[in-house]
Amino acid sequence: MNSKLEKLRNKFDKLGVDAILVKESNNYKYLSGFGGTSATLFISKNKQVLITDFRYIERSTKEAPDFEIVNQGSSIYDVINSLIKEENITNLGFEDTHTTYSDYGVISEKLNAKLIPIKETIEVIRRVKYEEELECLRKAESIGDQAFTHILGFIKEGVTELEIALELEFFMRRAGANGLSFDSIVASGINSSMPHAVPSDKKVEKGDFVTMDFGCIYKGYCSDMTRTIVVGKATDKQKEIYNTVLNAQLSALRTIKSGLEGKFVDSIAREIISDAGYGDCFGHGLGHCVGLEIHENPRFSPADSTVFEENMVVTVEPGIYIPGFGGVRIEDMVIVKNDGYVNLTSSPKELIEL
Image 1: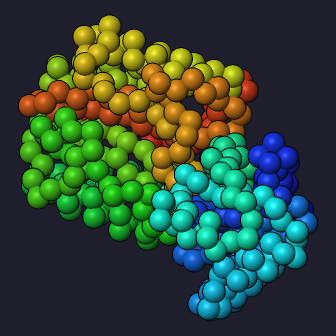
Image 2: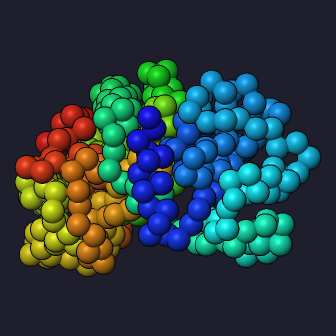
Image 3: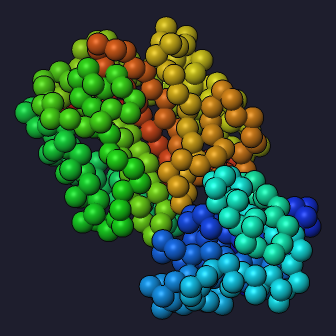
């Protein structure tokens, strides 16, 4: 039995629907296992159908064994209307948060059922990870750890940010990654004051901070980690900033457990950075959940009052960014547990001077 489908079906009555259409790629992958780029799921109380085109018929049969596979042919709307009639569907749920205004106009005209928005129902179900999902996340993050160990032997004066980013990406691919979670961030010297700096042809110089934020995809699941190092000998100010960020992260980690609101965990790290005089230099949230997407909800942020549950996976990434000087971010990815957390990131966090 597909327990993910059962969780969704258990929400039908509350949503006021007889069936749901799923078109968002991460949502249909989560529910069916199919990872292609073209699919629509029709899920009723008694039936689950994956509708796709000729290119993906064979693949979907292998990847989505719990689903009936139907070729959409020349008109997917004819296929869906046939299912609506067969299943006697009156109210059909749809993913309104992933539907454009123009697409809504088309489906409301073409489909013979009342359309009911389901908001982020599936995304909420996705928040708490199953063990097989956690295993993929563990593997993805372990590849990142291996990449960080490797890159320490590659970084030296004169290499460019772009060369470091490419080396990280090549290594993760060779280590078994299926792709990148996001475009790698490598920022050296004064560029490290930009949280989402784009790697450039700037060469690493002696005394530079080098911040590296990177991750990979393994079987559809994303990893995310950040480490900041110094090339050469760190100055007293660099050490002060680094240790403040590290203290903030370790304090937040010690706080994490299920039952806490995201904004509370965020406040632990934020207070430490503010008390050190750098409150204005930490302008982003402490962390975000991770899964099939690199940025998922809920979050550790001042604005998020969501209560975290066991087996949510979230990043913990405080930072200090000073324009004209540089910046530090340290990021781990952890599993929230009832009595604490499990850290999926094993790379060292003490200040590394190359």
